[in-house]
Image 1: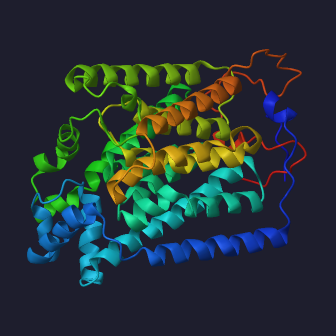
Image 2: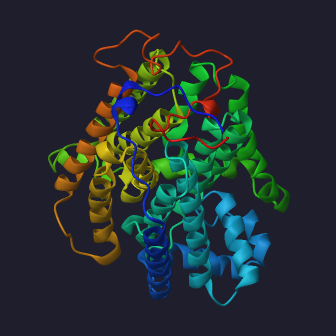
Length: 429
């Protein structure tokens, strides 16, 4: 075993957390796991509007067009990797489409919990706190509503994106980019985390050629549909057609556009909003790339969480579900820094869950303007925390403070940059 010598000043001043008693962890874990199972079983028969209007018609099309042969047709506005899953489910459970579709989403809920465990363990060695974090993800209201009520598949692309983030901090760039490519092939909202890849590449901790794995995987996953007979032009144009399909400034998303007057002209705002969001992302990327602080796994995950929340908050035409990645990552950063960020998942869950309600159940539990202000507060909190980590107000002598390290180099290894609390021994990578 070895001890890390690379802790930031704020981490040095933070007292080590007290391990939760083993009996408490076991009982709590059993209760949460049982509750997560019971809730999902009870919700399996709920049919959302998206299931009735989209998923069920897609299933019927697959049924009436010969199973896998249906893939040659343009019958759904999702990319083909998810359609492969639907076709597979058709052969496995032809008479139970709702339960089968939800079972896949629930399976990836479990994958999200496992990845949460792994990501939290970078900052909190041991298994007790990471296990509680993982179980917390299984009970997040938006995770339950997204898969077990809505029958949506955001858990799938998010799981691959978080796996990519995990291997990125483990210094496995090709595997990380491959997994990010799979995530993007399922849903283009995986783009929200791509600025993290740009940061690591600019800091020479990821070879630029590794980024080629993303489009390579995307195209490779199109090959089965091409072989069956789907035109390549249709496959490559799926995401652009999705982007053109919605012209509203916000679709129930708790974004900055909820704060604009109702009569504002959307066409005049959309382009400006995209440019502004791009400028903010580039500013954050530049700040991360230029800092002389080491980009530890904790800081990289914090930056990823900021991007996952700030990008959909600033971009126009966002759906309420587009904060899903931020919903999950907020749990990771909260358990990594419980004294500073414990409240972040609570704020995000309020804003996200509030925005889910109108579409799923009708009615409105509260003004979406309030939810947007709460999400703005989350963006500010995460940005301030990251700025304090990367640009300390009173930098000390690097020789006296191990948290102030040399600039990144081509040989720096993210997997060895964990910064656990003092006096907490770290397990081997």
